[in-house]
Amino acid sequence: MTTVLGVSRSGFYRWRDQRDVITPMEQARQRLDERVLAAFKRSKERNGVVRLQADLLAHGHYYDVRTIGASMKRQNLVAKAARKFVVTTDSNHPLPVAPNLLERDFEADQPNQKWVQDITYLMTSEGWLYLAVVIDLYSRTVVGWSMSDDMKASLVVDALKTALWRRGFPKDVIVHSDRGSQYCSHDFRRLITQHKLVQSMSRRANCWDNAVAESFFHSLKVEAVQYEPIQNRADMRQAVFEYIEVDYNRTRRHSALGYISPVEYEMSQSA
Image 1 (cartoon, rainbow, N blue to C red):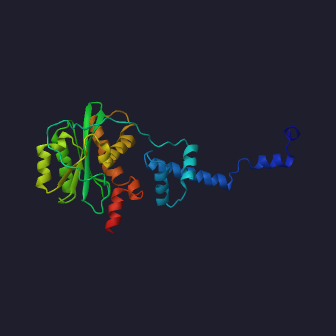
Image 2: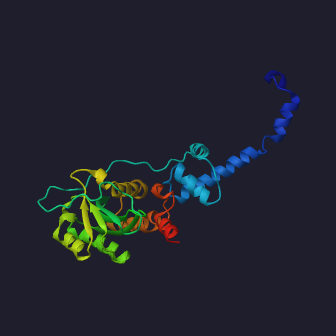
Image 3: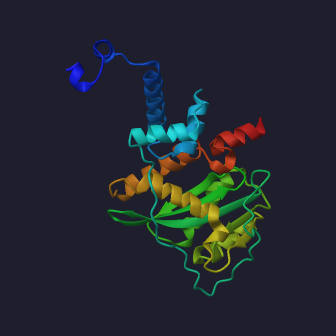
């Protein structure tokens, strides 16, 4: 057999005796794959190579992104992908609008300097559920949010009230939104005036003027909603609560913050 195959007898016997022995290189690759898989599962299958690299580094393991990418490919690990979602803004109304004070400047050097807010639709087995959020641009923390079966002004009023309460009722905060009728309503503008906030609005039909809020909704839908079975309203509320309060604010690594979570960023800056 060795003659037919063109190999030496000693080489054949060496291969036979060592074929079940795992080499140091194979052991290192196995450890890598186990660590990458564990980090991928910790992220609920949401993170790509860059966030996985940050997570592994936080656990004491440094690998470059190409090595992590090769491991993901070997294991058929694919981060949850995106798709387009319906636009929610209805700016065709006669209500007064505020000027665009933010001008796409999404940086803030202290908390409660600039907040952005928006509304999105979430499909459930019982019909639409609507989510309004308020995000502090300083740390990208979701500081206020509210959910409702309808899109009345109370939806955004409740979200802003929550943000005010959680942040200790700061004054002079620039509060930016699109031109949706809820943000132009009398009740919402009265709340702005009552707490001495400064209202700002995007230009008509320009989603880039509120890109941070749009990005948050994109992440929410891709990471927590898109791949799940259609839920009823109660289950959807629970899923949103868990994503915002547990995953996004406290553990999700944010590229704009040096790949740490919003809560970690605020704690590190106040230390």
